[in-house]
Length: 214
Image 1 (cartoon, rainbow, N blue to C red):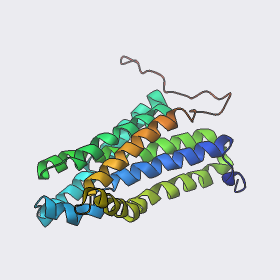
Image 2: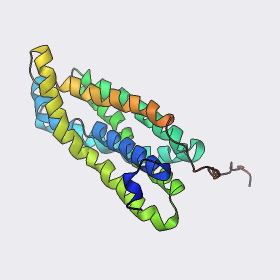
Image 3: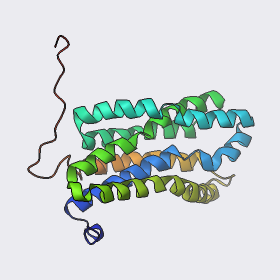
């Protein structure tokens, strides 16, 4: 297993592509936190409003995971993760274009949906790895994916400062946040063309349609 992790073949390729998808969803999900103080000053937000935005960022995540789970059963992890990655561009761009607290509330509520990506990769990994390797594979998927929160905190301010040299203004948080969504959407297309729901010869099992009167 550990030797295979150094390769980019077979199920290990799927694992690496999938944890990176999770990583990007977490970068998007946490792209507000590094700029909370700056955004608060530029848009004249109160400390209470900034705290409210943090709650909005989480509010829809739990119900979204249920809905994502339903889509996952219906369409499979390949299409579901692709859809989620491409959707991430919507709240990212909405946040980047926000001009007041109300705009930010809407954009961060939508961003909570992106935080549901964890569910998709767990299913993908379980389809590709045998029982004796599922634990380690899911640990790698979850560990590197969650690292996206640190990735946002560490890299986005640097990107914002670098972008400010192009505009001659202050830290360009709008560019940095918008960029995360654009990268996620592009990777969604790459992911769709690079993975399969199951290994060759294995059929993805979808739930049978329920008949209301039975």
